[in-house]
Image (cartoon, rainbow, N blue to C red):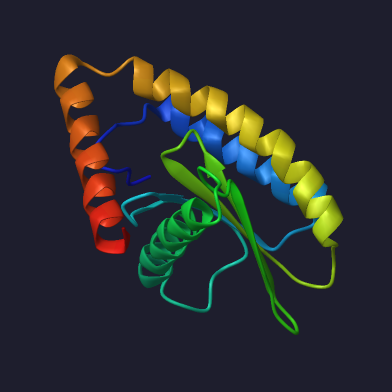
Length: 161
């Protein structure tokens, strides 16, 4: 698993993340789940093979989430912790995990938005706990790198502010 430069995963972390995503896909009958960090790096992919460039998709997903954070502020919210995009055949549901990672779920008419939302809520709670553990055990150098991410968010805020 390739992770962001701001943190690193152990093999146990990777296995726990993968198991949580596989359970989510099984329980929700969704096609694919991707974890993308807020800088646009693809962290993990589980499920059906993608028919498009996952790296470009990850970048666009992070930009989409950042733009929606700005829209949320405009209407008086601090952020939108989830987004839903519905197409004729394919839909996407995105949810914030630990304020650093976005869980993206791709699904079709084999399941319903209600089931995806219900199962995603449980998965987000599990992943948030896991990511908080990953972030909190970093060395002082890693905490400093987290500040770099915060600086990137500030720059995005300036662009849209």
